[in-house]
Length: 446
Ligand code: ADP
Ligand code: MG
Image (cartoon, rainbow, N blue to C red; front, side, top):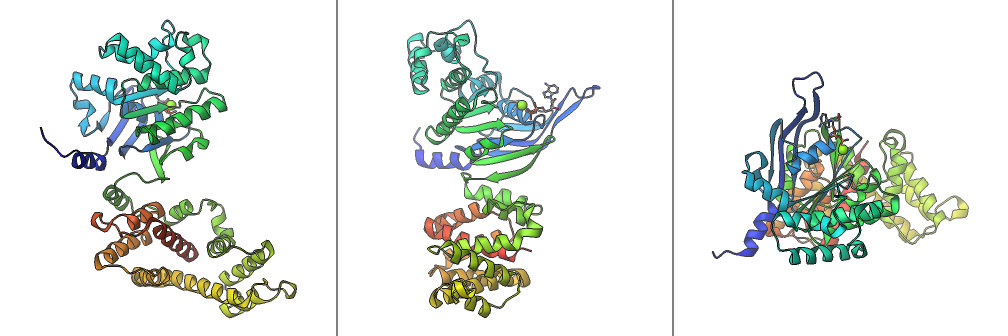
């Protein structure tokens, strides 16, 4: 049959590879030891994402992962893989799912002690009836890739934990599945072996384009993920996007759906990583001063910067006017100023003022916010937008101001081509504009 591979591929990429729909898991339902391990949960995972499911022990992470793998049947709700509900799969389809589409890795490596390493890796191939010669070749290739080919003839008991986990990873890959599910894969490993295994998983995602879902309770692992799903008491309580790989339409959809609870400050915290919730009440103004300064400046001495920071604090606390601020920046360090030259002091004061003005508009006239900010950004960044570009630009801006999207999604809207609903800006410009917007939103916040 003739078909356009590109179109088909694009369509596949824009659909989730895994959909968890109103899933609930209750163990021992109706018995005295009934456990509600998973409350109603919805989750969509897209091709090539690296998702970490994170939360304390007992919060339901493994339960969710096993439900995705089909090892655990839903009590209520549904899980589908590539659009097919696992519960409705025929025996044959389910077999195909486990043999060819999903590779699993566990904390306890589950290697078979009576088989040697190569045989362990090739075991999944045996089940699909591949000839022994080919079987061995692909097994050897994987062992070589993970630096354990010398161990091929040994038995599991002769290997270290890190080596065993690499064998388990090789085994999970031998049928070339698209999805890798890993349940606390480094939970039993020393830190060096753990890092090694985490790097392998990252590489499988980035180089081999596998969709990876890893469960962990260790916060140090979180930076590896594109997206972190936080769980607590059987629920997803929040998600954090490091790298948006979902198609723009899907982000739009899900973000708008959850917008009522989405918290403006929470999003700003994602933009300013060093901002902690504890700082919000007491330290927000000094924090703003620091961020604003970092945003506006470089090339000054430490002392010039720290004095300017002090004056910015005064300005943000409204203890001084913009004029005094500019004067102070210009004054010599010896005279209690920041020792900048007049030119720099003035242009800095003007930029600061513009930002403060914009954030005031956001705060006091939310109805005019989008228009006002859009006009300001266009002027500041010298943007010449077509009607269509401008429409998409303002639409995205509006969503950010309503905290329906965060900075990552916003940047994505900005640099997505106009034809695909974006503003068609260069990536670099998009990022600069987003930083300006985040700063304005931060300064507004009180
Ligand atoms: P996590 O992986 O986050 O540590 P789990 O998904 O393993 O959490 O467990 C969630 C809850 O379900 C816990 O209270 C656990 O004791 C319970 N649980 C997990 N598996 C079973 C099971 N097979 N039978 C009964 N209860 C279970
Ligand atoms: Mg677990």
